[in-house]
Length: 385
Picture (cartoon, rainbow, N blue to C red):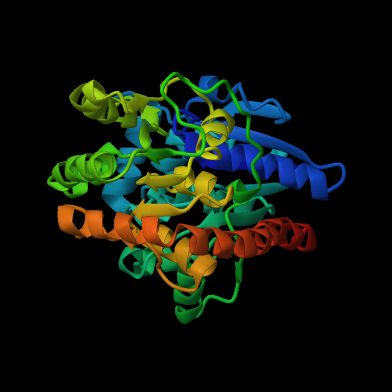
């Protein structure tokens, strides 16, 4: 069986890398004879994932003005308000692979959280027209993200695997019958433990991740995070390890964290992890932290899956849903509107600090169950094909 993962824009987002790595591993582990391929918007960034059977250029192509394709697509849209020809040509790098594969996995877990996705809709239609199986793999979608057009697209899938209960319940409420509940494959991802950097306190280092995406959505959040860093330094003796997890141009955690580092390095208790590590190496550091505070979902998954008490600077349904499935409540998750309130951030940290042992016990009981739910996705995929 040949499986093509698509809707992936490269592994400089270490969360996207984590999805590809862990999904490839558990599929190959559980489905004998399967071959897993990846269509990537930035294939050069994915070469580090060695278990893949092949990596294809899945980047979009521009329609050159006044070319045959441009003229035909313009005419089709002008006369029929139909952009399918243009979208097919723009995504031809993926479309042309359809006859070669058996199953298409749309792996961008939160792609459907960012407005309409006409390009993915067109690919999905063509996958089904080609007689192939189509799976939405480990998704999160909020009520606020839904539209009639999106709902019609979701009906095309042979199987939708929601990675947390909030998404699952919402999709079921829309009348979709092709939805099953699983967990994010990244809960199962291995880790690589590199040498600890100078200044790291074994058993007494807190990780902090922050992102431009969160800062753009709440411009005052960086002020509150700065207050939180000062609070941790004043009230504890811990070292803070600033931890990037996405290093894409224009969306680079390292650039923001470097500013925090320059501001607080004089304390001798703030260190900055490098910006060139892969997902399993970041997970290796996160696994050895005492606490973790993170904005990037897969950085927090790396912490949860190693029983590290975690506070989430959340901005979508996925953060809330994952916490709900682990704790039975949205434990230590702050919404986007809350994270500009320094008092709330400090109070949530104090709560996490006070309940450290209790949180670890809950994680030790919950994470094996969550990992089984990650593998359930593979079992459902196997049943489908």
